[in-house]
Image (cartoon, rainbow over all chains, first blue to last red):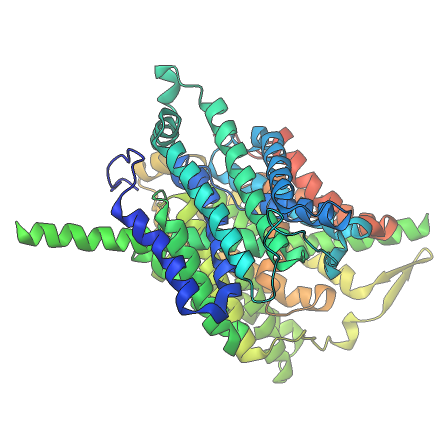
Length: 323
Length: 286
């Protein structure tokens, strides 16, 4: 983490262009794989919300899926009960998840990493169990189906090929990216990084550590909820797994694979993870588990900082040899 | 009333199992602040080893010590080769690393032993029921409780009355000061890690008849381990025992009388206890 690539000033740079060209190229080149594409984009947005929390503020969470799932169920329940307008449903899901984040943040941010892990894990499992037991509302293990959405903006129908879903997810993820990029370059974002590097010293310069962490936890929860709502609205189904521990672990893994605290890591990690999952899990889920475990062990032992950390290391070495 | 006592007894037996499974994790967490989320993998392999041994004609009673020794040795090897490299890193790295190991262990178990639930053939002496004062108590559950009492006493003697135990307590209290006094904290850690792994393996073997065995075990019991650690306090053996038995009773009684709530109460208990007792029942403030 200490090898941070300088302080970002929030300006648009060429890697941003490259990052957002990829989904556009995907749309043209693989129009048959738009469903996978929008899943990756949604997951990337979810991972981005964790990056804001973990990569910038240094708050560790093993239960981030709680907010993703809350958003997913909010959007799903609204649609089932007649509110089929996508954008307001999305906003409502974000608000619900953010409020839940605000409510739980007070429990989370006061502890150290270990108790943060346990409390977030506990909250995540608690919510999963609650959704599982309240099957008259949530559908329990069978999931929530019969979700149908109105046309997006009154114009674009959610089609079977997933074109609308893809464009919708992409647009929302782009907006989320711009928001997070703005946040991390702001004085607020800088104070988050300072808290990550030394939470004990921050009060000495008058920074309200607790309040900052509550704020970032709330924002991250809201973003995660929006990602969950996107998944519901584009797949027209909510599975109980949206709240599962596996999802919380997976998003942490994706972020670690891509690299924390650099925004792009969330996208690289999500694409890498889901691409490999698609390839390997098709053969045998057990193999996929094995390779996933191996990747994690390798990331921790060798490539601290994930893919982006590796790129950084190679660039440093090239620079040193050039000198 | 008799039925209630029976349910509580089942809970005690279940809690005893949780104690054997979780005490190792509590000790390593308290000792080196090492978060070993792969602890359940040792339990799982202990279970498979026991099934293989019993299937190969080894008596159940002889298989259990073998499981402790083999899984304990495996734990020592894994600690030396892998865990040592991440023992002083950030908690997040430890979490990712050990979750990775748990995933790999689970996949290996699926590959070698198949994805289905496995059962073990218990000797006739350990099956059936014992009738005491009109109460039908499962012999196997009584056996479990007895094993746990033996282990708790043994651990208490080891920790409280041996040189190793004194070193262990010193290292838990203040690793740096202990190292400064010449206590080989690394070796103490290795030894207690091996012991904890061996006990987890034993727990895995003993638990087959009660809770089943399949490749998802490392994750299924993770929450229970964490609960034992959280409620009991990191590094406290007595705390782990009390917490495990309390959790077992709580869980079984809850599932019996309020089946609709499932494990909900248990998780609520975890969150509440983290808030009210951040250092557990018997944990020490650091």
